[in-house]
Structure formats: structure tokens, C-alpha cells
Image (cartoon, rainbow, N blue to C red; front, top):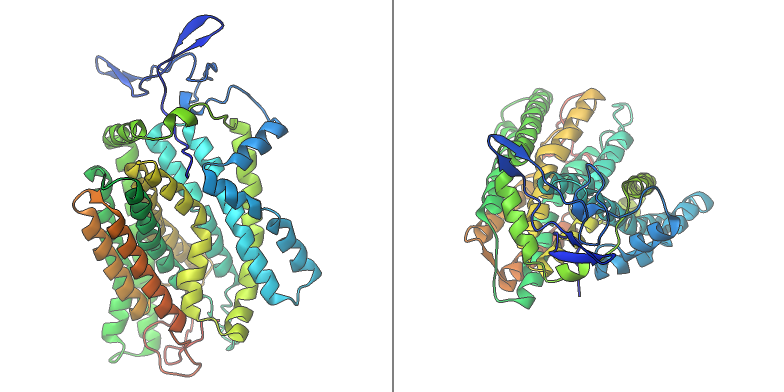
Length: 484
């Protein structure tokens, strides 16, 4: 059903009548106090390993070969990802309709929404191919970061499109709440939907799956820390909203949000340093063991790979397309919400996160299907931590630089959902085992949240603020702004 992607060196192969020794392990070997990497001269396919390239990522080629590039990219990481590539015709169609029929708002939104799926899939595939050429822990971190590119682009486009002119009362700061909802929606999509499908898909092939505490415990702890940090501004505003002036209180919430974002930003880099430098040996061992359990490894070892240049070209093409589609998508959100009666919460919590996380979800579910739960959780939890500790705070910090009132003053409805989601998933991760029942329960919880978000009423202009206005820069705290 799903093909696998990440390989480990095989045993021995024969090339031109001679035995070529391959990599049984790519771990650094100790020589006294020094650690040195001893990579084989040839990899599992008999290709000579280029200096600085991991044997698993050696393509045996250099430069760009259009035929190989298109064939390998179309094959993608798995059968599901390959099927997703059928959606590529929507990419030029979405761009063409945007300029040929600018009044066709629904068509522009729908086409660009669909077109983001194959482009995000290409980012995930090219990132994975690039990650193969690097040490395992750094490769997984890079792959996770590239998978979050779509999310960062969407957040930045939303922030840039936000109208921060107080004289424009109809559109003033209307996109700020959407960004906040999308931050939480991205976390929920990873924790509940993606992790749920990982548990469910893996549980269909085996009674239980086990994963290492080094992956789950660190991830759970960071998520609790991130959840605490993200909720502080909302708790501060809610507790004092009835006893302080709205303008003063909004300014203080904005200050708290900015300081909190800087701290979470630092926490993310401490987490990266922890994984890459001081404790990378633990993660290397866990991921190496996971590769040995890959059911399709014998097939994946033989798959052709992209060259380094081709990986970069694929990323440039995909990121360019994603930026275009993100701009076109955001331009039509106001019409979809106001004229088609789509809930603001549903748009921010559900629709936007689903399209931005498509590639990461396909990759993680594929890994779980192949009994590589540590890899799957590394991607799920890694992407969630990146959103909570990096992408979300980054938007606040960039907004600070652009003098925009981007804060972390989430609505209570969203805040409660986030905390409960972290508690539920943390409980499932506690025993180091998973099955399809736990996966189904996570998916059911996500569906319940989606139904609630769809029916969540849009705030009316002039109604009393309940704790979700943007702070600072003259935002009127006594008015409840529409999201769009």
C-alpha cells in the first residue's frame, strides 16, 4: 500500500565481478578520543560515494538529468504520494484562472487550495531526498523544517495582507485572529489527525507498535512547555478583562506575547542543539533501529535518487509555486467567509492547516505503515514543536518588526482545545505503545473539533469583546472584530 523511502546500507553487492563492501552501519567509530566517520567507497547500489554525501543518498549521478528528474519526482515517496502527483494539472490551472477570471472567487480559492497539495508534496519529497544525503538526525530535522515551509509562507502572507490602518474600520486587523487560529489548527492537525492516522495505519498491520521514550517523552515535555507559553497571554487577558481598560490591557498582552515568543524561539534552538549536538547519539541509535524494521527496505535500497542539484531545483520550483498559491488563496478568503458563510474558526482551525500539512502527514503515515513509528513520531512531534516554538513565535516577532499587532491572545475556545489535545496525546504516548484504537480515538476527537469549529459563530462587529481582539497599535478592545 505504501512505499518506503529511507534506506540503510545493505550487506554486499557485486560490481564488475568484484565484491564491493557496503555500509552495515553509518555510525561514527571511535579512535581514542576522536570520532571519525568511515563511509564506504561504494553504496548499496554500487555507486561511488561522493565526498560529503551520505551513502544512503548517493545517486550515482551529478548535475541535472531532466528525464531522471521527472521520473523520480513522479514516483515520489510512496504510492499515496505518487497518486497526489496526479493533481499537478491544477497548478497551472489555478494560476491561469486567477488572472483570466479574477471575479471567479470560489474557483480561484478551490483551485489554489487543491494546487497547494502537490506542490507541498514536492517540497516534502525533495526535502526527504536532500535529508538522505546528510547525517540521520540532521536530515530528519531539515526534512521537518522544509515540511513547515508551506506553513511559514501562509503565515507570512496572511500577516503581510493584514490591514493595520486604524482608519479602515471595516478591515482593520481582521487577519490577525486567523493567523492565531491557524497556529493552533496546525498543532491540532499534527497531534490528533496525523498522529491518529499513524497509529491507525500501523495498527492495521500489527497488534501493537512500540516507540522509544527518547522520541515521545522529549516531544511531550516540549509540547506542554509550548502550550503553557502560548496560553499565558490569553489567560492574562481573560483574568483582567473586566477590571482594566481595554487599550492598556491589549498593549500589555502584546508585550507579553512578544517576550513569550522570544523565549519560545530560544527554546526551539536549545531543542535543536539538544538533538544535533549533545544527545545525537541517542537519536541516531533509535532511528538506525527503526530502519532495520522497515518492511520495504529491500525495495527502497534499489530506488533511484535525485542529485543534490536536482533536490535544490525541485525545492525552488515547489516553494515558488507554494508562494503564488498562498497569495491567491489568502486573497479569496474574505469572499469565502463573508459570501459563502464559512465559519472563521473553521477556516483558521481546519481548512488552512490541512492543506499546509498535507506533505508531512503523508510522509509520517507512510512510515507508520512500514513499522517505523520512531520516524513517524519524529516527524509528527517535530512538526508540532516547530509550529509551537518556531513558526508561531516567528510570526509574532516579524509582526513586531513590521509594527503589526500580532499577539498570542487566543480565544478561550481554541485555548481549551489545545490544552486538552496535548493532554490526550501525551496520555497515549506515555506507555511507548500504540494501536489502531488509539489512532481512531484521536481522529474522532479531531472530527468533533472540526464540527464545533464549523458551527462556531462569526463574531459580530460592535459586539462585546470576549478575549480575542488584537492588542496594541490602537486596537479597540471594546469592539469584537470580524475575522475577515
